[in-house]
Image 1: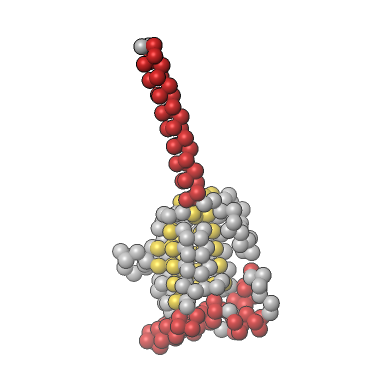
Image 2 (image 1 turned 60 degrees about the horizontal axis):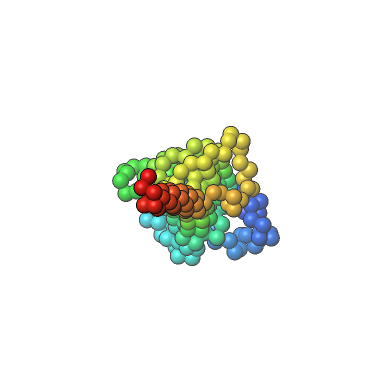
Length: 222
C-alpha cells in the first residue's frame, strides 16, 4: 500500500506543474485521497466484505466528489486532476500511468450485464467532461478530448473527439505521459459549422447564378 502511494504521488509530481511537494500532494489533492480510499475499499471488496467496501467508497465520495466503485481495477500511477464529478464504475479497468480530468465518467450503457464498463490501456488521457460508456477497450497511449462521448473501441496511439466520438489517428509513436496538450485537438463542432458555412456559400453562389440567368431570359427571351 505504501509503495502504491509513493507511485501515485510521483505520478502527480511528474504531470502537475502546480504540485510543489510530496507533502502538499498527500495533504491537499482530492484525486490522491480518492485513490487511497479506493485501494483500501478494493482490498475489502476482494475479501467479499462488500458493505464495508461501499461504506469506504461512499465516504470518500462525500469528501472528494469522486466516486470510484471498489470493484474497479486500477493500475499504478493514476492521476485524477481536480477530480470533482469523476465516476468510475464497478467493472471498469484502468491501466498504468493514466490521467483523468474532472467530470469524467467511465460508465455503462444500461444494456450490458457482467462486464459493463470500459477498459483503459496504459498512458491514456481522458479530458474534462468526457464520457466513456460500455464494455470495450481503449488502447494504450490514447487521448480522449474534453466532452467527447466514446461508445466504441478506440485503437492505440489515436485521439477520440466529438459526440459521438470519432477517431483521429496519431501514428504509431508512443505518446509521452507528460503530454497534456489538449489545445491542438480538433474541435468537431467548429469543423461542422465551417462545413455548413461553406455549403451555404456554395448555395448562395448558385442562387445568384440562377437569378442572373432568369433576368437575362426575361430581357432577351433566350
